[in-house]
Each structure stands twice: as structure tokens, then as C-alpha cells.
Image (cartoon, rainbow, N blue to C red; front, side, top):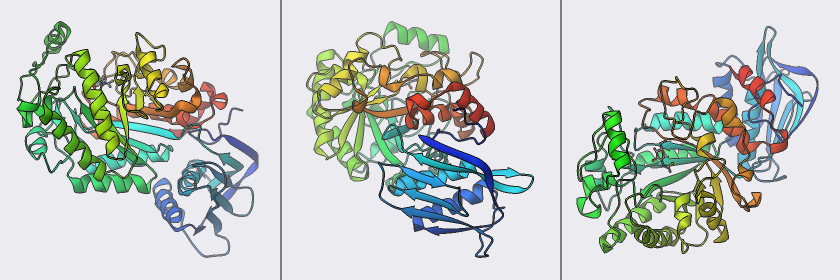
Length: 480
Ligand code: TNX
């Protein structure tokens, strides 16, 4: 069915549309207090406060009820009667019902209306993530929260914060204070850097939780650690410079990394923690313990990508130990898929796949190993979900190493068909990362993220069989 009369994204699992629409000149909102508050805030934004609440008898009643029926995140929305009813299986489901209602609400010459529909909805995947790289460009709390508003309105439920990389360390760690004192200054470009204090982080976690998003913190180890060496030089090896890195830096007119000094270039794979020093594991243990303590969500992401200068045997030793240190905090470790090359990775570790939709080299095998060890996969195919890939050749922001990714390319893939031999049940969901080498402001972020974030929302939520490019394109056009 091509369902175009309202800009519903992601497309619900089941819609029964009947004729006509329900007119609303004023509303009365009753039911679950959190959902009532969330709908009130949403309505004020959606209508610029032009749809008043009232207790008059002609106000349309909107009832928000937690009923505990259905599956996780499921809800039913019914606009066929005199009032509007939303039933949530859980608090998240009820919240998603309110987001759908906000999308259904249309302003016509005769006032606000919603179409007469029965929507019975639940997500395809439990994990629907966005990632923000705070290391290459730092975003203050208010901007992270603006992104949470944007993503949660599209039913994303995980916010992965890439908190550390070669160019900066962005999270307060009390036991290693120089990390933020010395290594949070500057970024991968002209901006001044910054970091989240523990209070800031708590604020983001709470703000996200109120919108049913779980924060997944990442400290990238053992590579992508040049900034650690700015604070504690004894923990990090001298930069390892491949010919490619040297040639690329020259082509971009960027500096090469110098041990112990701030690095503002884009080269990757040149830094490594010192694998054979016990002090390294004291550092990893302290950092992961503090991070686990301030994180209510179940995941701790420890990176593991692009360790080009770390010898394979050292990488193996580090990942086997670090995933166990992460697991000992009580959290589930997450790593990028390269760590799946490590036979003895801690059981249950979740892998984040960032290869292409047609896997190259050993990527598929590495990803499948997480599942063989009792873990699962988050799919972030870089030629589909990487929001920092240019949407067109001439787009001023972004990179293109994984390809040019226009909206249709971003939309057209099935996360369950990428890694052979892995059943859909072992795929937690998808995540759309925004790496920020070329991003200097929130306006840049929005320019790269929109409208492709809508495509990823639909891939994460809607049944594969119901997904249709023509329908999606028409709905995105209506969303403006
Ligand atoms: C690859 S994909 C990276 C990042 C870069 C990004 C730029 C992955 C796990 N790592 O370090 O920022 O490319 O597109």
C-alpha cells in the first residue's frame, strides 16, 4: 500500500485507514502522566501552541493508556471514534504512539485534523541507534539534546556517544584527571574542543531516558588513542605512520601526529596503547569502571577499530583482556567488528559491523564470530548508514571513502541480508553513525543527517516487506 496522505516515518507495521478525518479545535489529554507530558510538549512544538487544551465538551479527548499488551515498544493508535486513543504495551510504546500522532496531525484551511486510522505498531528491531562523534567535533549538552529530540521523534532508542579519539578526550574521569584537563582542548578542525563533566553526562542520560533513548558510551581502545598520550604519554606508543597516512596528510595539507601533542588531522590507525604495560590495564579498568558507574544502560563500547599499527598478536591480547574488563563491570561489551578476529573475545560481546553491504575481506567472518560466541550484531553498513558520507559528489560537507550515499541508497538495504549465516534473531538492529571530521556546527550536523536519518529510522523500525522506496519518498516529501 502506498500510504501518502500523512508524512508517517517510520511506516507503521499495520495501518487500517478508513474514510475521512477527525477535526480538532481543542483537545483534552488524559492518562499516563509521563506520556501526557511528552504529548503536551510535542503538541506545543508541532502546532506552535495553536491547538489549545480545554475541558470544554467539544474538546477532542486524547487518552493515553499503558495496557501491557503486545511486544516491546508496541502501541495501538485509534482515531476512528469521537476521541483519540493510544494504548502502549510499555512506556516506550506509549511514547511512540504519541510521536505517530504528532506526525498524523495536519493543518488544513479548516484547522487541525488527523486522518481516521487504526494503527497497530511494533518495531522490527529492538536496537535503533544513532551515533555522534564528540571527539572530532565537540557538541555541548544542548546540541546533543536537540539531536535526541530529533532522533527519538523517529523512534530511535539508542544514542551511542563516541567520546574519545585521536583528536580529543570528551568525558570526565576522576581517577585520570589529565584526560580532560589536557586532552579535551581542540578538535579535528578549527574549533576549541570541550568535554562532558559527569554532571553534563548525567544530564544527557536523563534527557535521553525521558525520550526512551539509552546512552551507549564509547571509549575507543586500543587504537584511536593519540589524545590519551597528550594527557599520559607513558600509556601510548609513538605514532605509527603508514605510507598511505603520510600521503593522505600531505594531500589534505594536514599535520602528522606527534607523540604527546594535540593532533588535528584526520589520519586514522596511527595510535596504540602500550599493550605490554600493566599500567595500561589499570587505566582501562579505572576508565571502564567509572563509565559503567555513570551509565544506567546495558552497554559499554570499547572501540577496537582500525588498529593498523598494533601488531595482530598484541591486538588479540588486548581485546581478550579489555572485553573481560568491560564485562566485569556488569555491562555487555560492544566493539567494532574487527575485534571479531579475536578468537577468545569475551563471550556475549556485541559486534558493530561497519563494512559495506557486500562484505569485503574477512569482515563477514569477523562479524559472524560475535554470534558464534553468544553475542549479537548491530549493523552500520558504511555505504548505507554512515551519515558523514556525502549524499552527492558536490556536497560541501562529508567524506566519500565508503561511497556517495544519496537518500535512495541509504534506504535500499536489508540489515538481515548482509552477513551470510547470521540469522535475523542475532541482529539487535541498526545504527547510523555521524563521524565529525568535516562537521563544525549543529547546522552542519543537520545538513548531513537530514533527510537520510528518516531512511535509517524506517530500516530500523518497519517490516522489510512493507518498505517501499516510492512510498517512502512521497512521505519524506510531505514531511518537508
Ligand atoms: C572510519 S568506521 C572510522 C572513523 C572515522 C570515519 C570517517 C570506524 C569504526 N572508524 O574513525 O571517523 O571512518 O568516515
